[in-house]
Image (cartoon, rainbow, N blue to C red; front, side):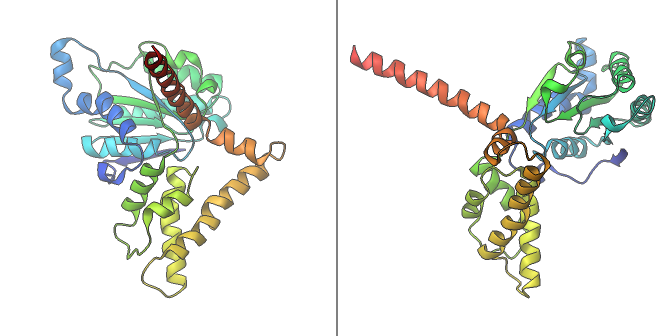
Length: 289
């Protein structure tokens, strides 16, 4: 429910597949953590935090841990808040902020947050309103895979008005993740080929794939991890997860489940394709004139 890490051992080099999102978080959090006097001198109040949204397993918490590592901050992770009933949720939120105030600098992260009980929500809003970013070195991140399910009052101006979207990793991002997690392995596989076989996988699934492939090689009494080990790992990690999602909701077809799972990435791709199509149409009209 509540986990505390003092300066997690997660350098920026350990984060793959979400470089743009990490850069945005660094702009929002790193400078206020490291140089709070600059904001105080200018009379500007830093942001209190942000909402991170996207598919589960898209490295939202990993990015938060990397920020905490680079700034020397403690990270206080709150999970399963939606399962708390009655006043329990409010107690958890209050304890998280009380713990944060005992640290020189702290990052409070609410993991996989959806609809919370009224008591927890009221307490969170109250803590955000009472958080003075110029005086306290505490920041807040709320992670969710359903932005529409969050209470809009959390995202009002002066609370968590900043939003950072995390998408499923593309081919280049998946290859980067594989490179990071095979760095200390004896790997003989073509990582770009493996990345192509992982289309639609989350960053967490791609990283787990490396450990599973290494396990397959060890069980085969081989020191080098080969492409056949990754193919076996894909069957066990990625396809097994997809089948589990399908079993959890038998009312939806597999195609619908895949579409729902990649909704964030799909919307981004559609916007990009629409802009390109419009640009190409304008160019063709100009050529005809």
